[in-house]
Length: 156
Image 1 (cartoon, rainbow, N blue to C red):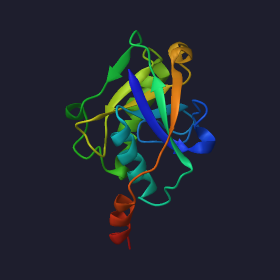
Image 2 (image 1 turned 90 degrees about the horizontal axis):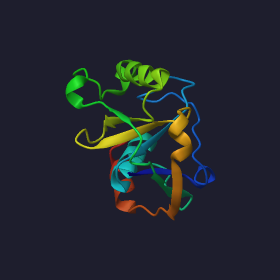
Image 3 (image 1 turned 90 degrees about the vertical axis):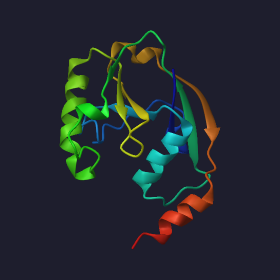
């Protein structure tokens, strides 16, 4: 399985996990957030950056996860009604933290809050199979400036 990340170039040469809190992990849980497509990775990054600051310093990471590793899959129907609201991270973090602590599966496949019909893959960097995850390519990222301009119009 190929997954994708869009990151600043200083982080694009390794599978680095900061341990910062995210929707599916609490502080200190070192996971990598990836998307099942480049376009979803872009939308996720756009949402988190509020559409600002893209430039030629960003890269697309292409990551290979072996087909032999296990994933826990979470569907939208399993989640609370308002799981996508950024103020409701705790419900998703509880699921992600349990998955991380159990350590049974390398990946947690979760619906995207931006496009719930598509999936992100959260990767546990402490799982024994993490050594099988490979960064196979890094591409230049040059997004269409029109999307950033549209978002800037609606920000106060």
